[in-house]
Image (spheres, rainbow, N blue to C red):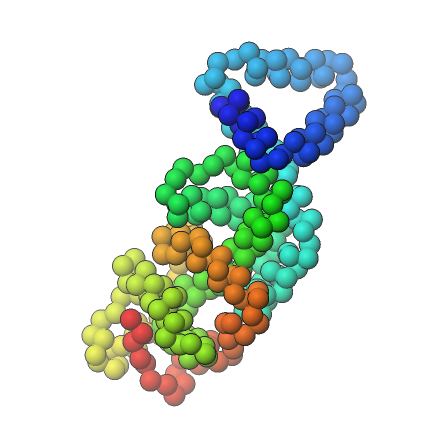
Length: 267
């Protein structure tokens, strides 16, 4: 695994980053007392001398550790981070993109894209290095974050709120087909919203105004199983490129459920 990882890192043009890390480690090592430095060097030697199985276990841990530190470099793309935060606030979504949160997004993005392409997720360290060295990949990541948070918001809406949201859109039919129907289908099959007596008006009220209660873990599972990662990226891209792509009025959507309206079924 050690050899494979090294080759893959070269392919992702990570040499510049690795050189910086090596210089930093050398500088840090010189500050250590002699005994501690010997322990570090002994550990490095033992890793090189152990069996491939043990190497794989150790390097897997080290990959994640190094990747976590490299995420700090992605956070330096402050313009994109500020734009994503600004767009999220347009939908009343308060999200601070700190290293811990960004790390979780990157891991999810890695898993989601592999799931869409029906392949094993690549090594996390390699994935992070690709993000660092590819502006296009980082652009997709930030669009993914934006699209994911908006879809997550829609998953937590009641069906009445879905109705109010799609009524604001210019192309209602496309919006219903692309987002509302898949989400409401996921609500049904996961027992989150269970329609009963759909043709009876007052019976319909009970499930139509029900606010879904979904844990964060379940939300991630629902997004990953309902939409492929390209749809999530494209939604974020469309929102960031066209200000009125997704019309949103918080007071109207989340207003009084008893307001005068007709409870149409959208699925």
